[in-house]
Length: 311
Image 1 (spheres, rainbow, N blue to C red):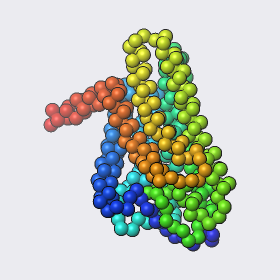
Image 2: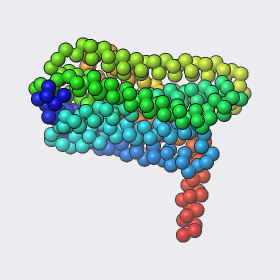
Image 3: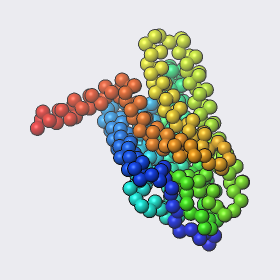
């Protein structure tokens, strides 16, 4: 790759070139990033310390929270720093690393969300066999497969992109190193790579989204046989999950399930799955989940207030 390249760094155009807008975006996205880190850390700590949440559902929720922290950290710190930086550059290998980590954690999120839908299906549609289906070993295997699948996806995606030569163009019309904006800079025919990218990213997003929709359709149909209270709890949990899925998958499908054409809207759409969804996840799963809210109150009362009383 080094032999075929004349590029040592890339330049981002960012979300805006207007200095006033950049300053506003700096404070706005800094706030978003703080909410992402604090909110998802809060869920991780709550699940860890509250023994009542040591169940498959919350095991995968803690996986999702960890993914959200890492996923947003692949793009947000650089984007925030660039808002107040005159030179929005990234080294060649920094771009490679950013694309790899972004797609690794992004694909992990897709697989974890899909596994969470399977967990809800087993809990609601197969309640008597749930503990057998979702045993500790099964959960560990599903989590391991999610991470391994994400690793394979990211490796292929990054290799496909950066095995191409880059000659003189170095301005990326985006705020991070994503496949389509980077492919536009390659000084070679990218038609085959574009098709492989659609197959790799677009079809994974679409396929998992269809699986999710099918699983929730089955869940909703099966709820007719349950009591009113069971329906209410199940709909609350599934409603939270569907909200997250919609905010994440629809923009992903819009961006990746098409040839390498870019639209002015792409950068704004990308904000949804890189920043908005990781920020909304902890809010949705805490505000609409009584178990998590009760666990947080319990930890606060016993761990925090209890320590203060001892002091």
